[in-house]
Each structure stands twice: as C-alpha cells, then as structure tokens.
Image (cartoon, rainbow, N blue to C red; front, side, top):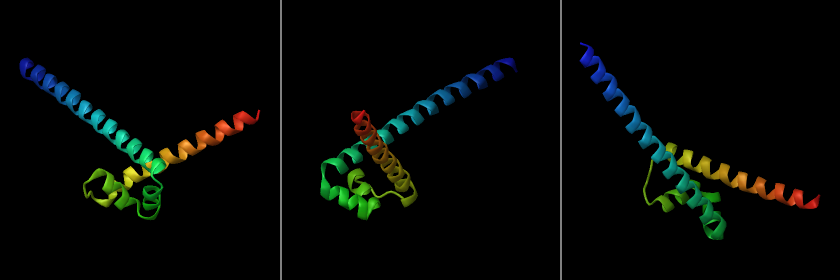
Length: 99
C-alpha cells in the first residue's frame, strides 16, 4: 500500500511539472505573438488601420489560423494593453524630459 501511494505521488508530481512546463511555454508563445502583432501595428500603418477596423481578422492574418473569437479576443486584449502601455511609457518619457 505504501509503495502504491508513493508511486501515485511521484506520478502526480511528474504530471504537475510537465503541465507547468507546457503552461509556461504557452504563455511565452502568447507573449511572442502579442509582441509580433504590436511591432507590425507600429511598423505598418495599413495593418494598424486594419487592426483598428477589424482586429479579429487582422490578428488571424498574422496567426495564419482561424481561431474561435473568444480566443482571439483574449489575444486582442493583450495587444491593446501592450499598445497602451507603450503609449504611457512614451508619454512618461516626454514628461520626464520637461523637468
């Protein structure tokens, strides 16, 4: 019985470690895609306009896959947050230069 419990705890630990690693990789991939889309918006005015008019199609064109809207919307929220953060950093930098 003790060996079975030890085996169970060992397997549970392995599953936790593997799932944790998969989750971290997925988060990193998501961050990369957000950064990629933000760079494209900043570099390509036409793509920026496309993102503003129809963000779902714009993001799917970068991803190359048609995802469910709820998943794409999460990515769009991340892109918008990153864009707003970058704008805030830029404004803060300009304010610091005044003083």
